[in-house]
Length: 456
Ligand SMILES: [Zn+2]
Image (cartoon, rainbow, N blue to C red; front, top):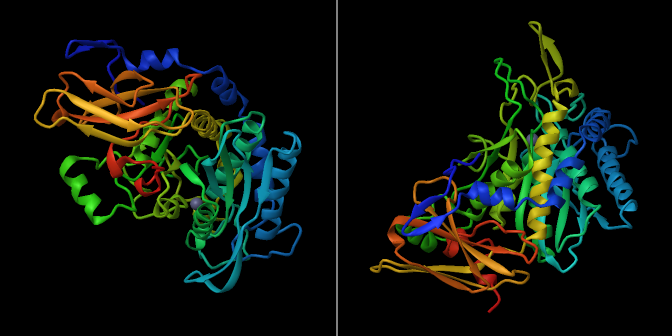
């Protein structure tokens, strides 16, 4: 939800049109079509199928054809293969695996992720990822045999990943899209760690990770309901920030402008434009309080990442043995899923992936100069596929970018009578057909791609 001026306003002698009006004009038919293609019926059939495997605990049976994590993973791979057959084999299905052991995995176990990779047409090294975890659990995290339906946690996220693949595989994009079904989340984020390693090993330039975990419930056990918002969690400063970078950032600002946070702002804008009656609630945290998800190992690897979670969770459903106690139904059962809501969250994901994959990468090497003058010079390096750039600025306490000025195809812009002390600045890149990247905040604090890997 944007909290921006509703009408044009004058600033420093320039008339700046409202961001909302500009966005209305820039609605892409392709993205509208993608939002419309997401189907709650498809997602219901995915969750029904997943619940049918009884348990999907990471340490459950891997050999059975009908029960356990092995059967569930093989089904996910076969679903991706089926989708791929409908797009002239546009998806490569990969199943990276690793033997893991740890606090919640006492004996070495085989951990397998299921990935479908839709290779980009012109910039395949540039990657955007949607993820969810297929493993499930009950009250005791070590119980690998009891029924653990995991409809919401995280059948909902897995269904979003598969639905995004079904919808987006009908189109071609400049950048690569990866659909990631992870396992081992409940035992210690193992699937996310394996994905981060896989991304590094394959030299993916990961621009965004959309992790979906618990996205299909609208009723709290306290009676609260919310079917019109989804929370998007994002870290404020980079997990990989060095002490030197932290020290400069503390001084000059950047506490709320990591690439993950600017990705969250981008997602909020997508929801405003393409998903009617539905809004993002940005949360300025990496995850829910003291809890974790598969976006965390991706952040640790230096990749911009956010977590989607429903607005109101139901704690009688999550991580519970299926039972009725004092008249209350416990357990993560499919009856509790709100499929139209789940489809709305998935629309935001699918449109965000498409918008990012169509747009150029955000500008790199963004710099600002102007201390002790009334003007601010913003400069950046050109990036492949960008036909134009746009400079953005906002009040230092504002949650969203409010002001912008096109820069054409230049790689710098001087903002006259705009004092560097008083504003936060950023730059986006725009393709010839009008797809705009997220805004990148200057310096290492905001860089989507680590400075050390920039081409000279
Ligand atoms: Zn989960």
